[in-house]
Image (tube, rainbow over all chains, first blue to last red; front, side, top):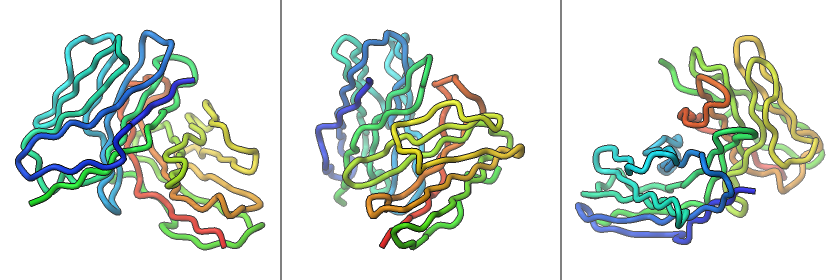
Length: 115
Length: 115
């Protein structure tokens, strides 16, 4: 079964600085999807960025980018120019391309942004 | 478009009771997934419905069930509640089934407390 591991329960960053959140996953599949979701305090979970495994190019969305290392099964999220509004729980998630493609989530990383 | 809505937002029940939670997906979305979120277990997939049929099911006991109506609205039911069922129950909708790249749009959740 696919598992997702986020080894950093908490991270903190100074406003305007850059922070990287780690995620590793375990799978025997070659084609799948990876996601980073953000869950602000008492607010709905929203998609930050996603990556298709067969694409070698790392996805970017404005200040958010990923470092996807397929061989190492690593999918880290980099947040540049951190803002106070980036404070949230961040979840890494894996989804198979085929079969029972339910979303598998990591335990989450709580990001604090210091002014 | 209105987002995913869930009712009720908060619920308090006692052990042994049953509960029904409701989810209205984004208009036009036909896939609805349910997740249980707890501090100890994180986000766990419960089931996914598409066109009124359960397409995927997570590893939860039979006390957890669901259904989807012709207008794509979904309900989940938990019978014989246990203390460990206390959690935030999240509903997510997406336009299609099986295309794992599709973003899932999450609702605000229903906070269930079992006493």
